[in-house]
Image 1 (cartoon, rainbow, N blue to C red):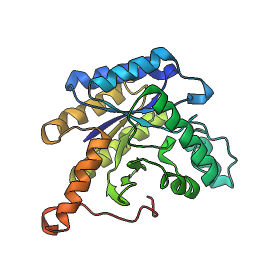
Image 2: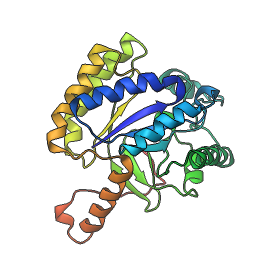
Image 3: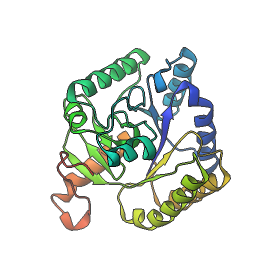
Length: 262
């Protein structure tokens, strides 16, 4: 099981800390922090970078989460407009980038990690949206994994592992209600998956019903799951997949072609 904190940036840091404190009320477990170098075009700060470095020292992982977290492109048709302007609220930064643009943004994020002296293993696109060009760019970077909403991909091994994300949207009462309904549906299906991803956003500790839902799920899953960062999960899943090639009846993990994202 991996607990993933999204949109980690100076403007969100206080809210992210509230979520992390709520997690630690249940257990002192490692988390993966998805950090954005220039969230909504705002620069990072030394104070924020020091705070994230402290979390690294306490066992957390930091992964790259886009560069600005903004989709600056133009929707192609009305369905694309709904997906990119309503569903993702204009934050699907890599949803329509060409390979060169995606590569430049990822490289800028990698340089930020190098300056901060943070180890970097993974990249997760805002809203989990990756264009074909972004997939091509990722395949050429020194990264071990990426994620979509429904799966974790190992970039070095070209493997796909089913891993639905338990995620919430808190911007309106309607979104919160729909999130709770989806959570109830997924809570049964995810128990059959090798990896469970609890994906939390900065304000998921600020709405009582949402907070109760994910904290209850975390409390239920903790006794039966090892909590690890996404980087550690990649290592364990890859090792399990190697064993399954010899003893396929003992391990249900299946790998799929990374060029067919879901």
